[in-house]
Image (cartoon, rainbow, N blue to C red):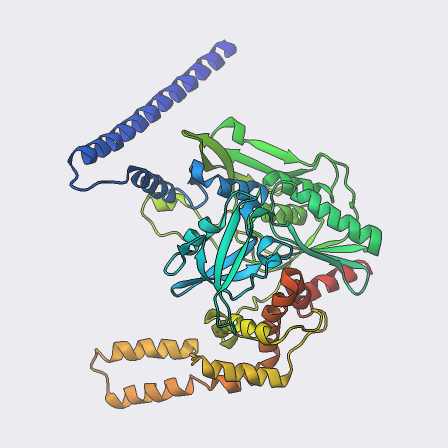
Length: 523
């Protein structure tokens, strides 16, 4: 009797699932029919010629936007984006570009890559790429033109600080492989290794291991600082491999739960740990996300690492790549992931977007570090200088007038050079307005439309003047911080990203806290 009841209940469940599936199929068929009919009516009746490929891509992207920012359509012509996403490789010149008003300029050429090898410098304005006028173009449009098949020639026309003539550079594109390990070094105490890990792409765990082994075997490090600040994640399997270097074989690292059975899985380490007893500290911040949160969160749950910094981003969603018609792909969210303690750290419920509700970030989302450090980014003059690109522009001029500088480990700006920077700000008509002054401006704007006592309005204006200090005084008061900010940008012009990291580590409060934590744990 009991078996018959079980069979009956199972049949009912199966029947319900079949009916639900049939209903979903009917809804999908209806939606597709409506869309197709609208396209047909437009084709027959609309007065102007339509770009149907563009309309279809727009419809798809708007539909996916309603789901979440990680579910995206990748058409065949954007295969390079897919390759970059999964392998960290693409065909191009090896440089970051940025938009400034109506121009696009080189922001950061990578060491040892075609742009840098052919004297393309940070601060260079792109006038043309292969004959395409870059004025009033977006960074995407210019980037698409810069990228191409490895081995093909690219021709750049550039405008450079301090050079009156147009600079022309012709060279071959190459396959660009962005390193997952941006920088690593045994620090001056010879006990601590530091590794800046930027992304989780194919073979990145192996790159991580090579760096650690070099520091262990050739420098004798005994403890490790892993810097995952700014790491947006990537391939989950690479995260599992990295965790496996530090915990027992067969340890549960993360589980995923989704709609279909294939999405429900427990990921465990599959190798014997190489550094099971090595003390670890992990640096995290608000941009540490996805696979980076799996590494940091699981090692925290497993009591294998101390986390230091700010609460992480809170991306507990898993994406998979699925092929779609005409050789395109869909990167689709298929599951939520859960750390060993059972927590899902997803901070935003994107289902609210489909309901038309405002998205809110759950303050309990993300991973709370064991040691919380105050975020050093402030709405003060350093932020203002950075936002208005004064730091970047001064570094461009400095590089044009200084053939060489000292090493990243020793370089520092003099007080005379800081005065030169202040003179540069005057030349550029730099303005500094505090956040308080901005707020008073808004109050004054509202007051101008209301029946407010004129004497009180005058007092507000006087108060605003007091809240807008002379930027020279502020810079001199904060000169150490401003010198560091300038030093970062200047050093990178000569020693690329590795040099910038080496310079920044001299002042890094997070690294200092990590070293103190590790040293105390070994006493």
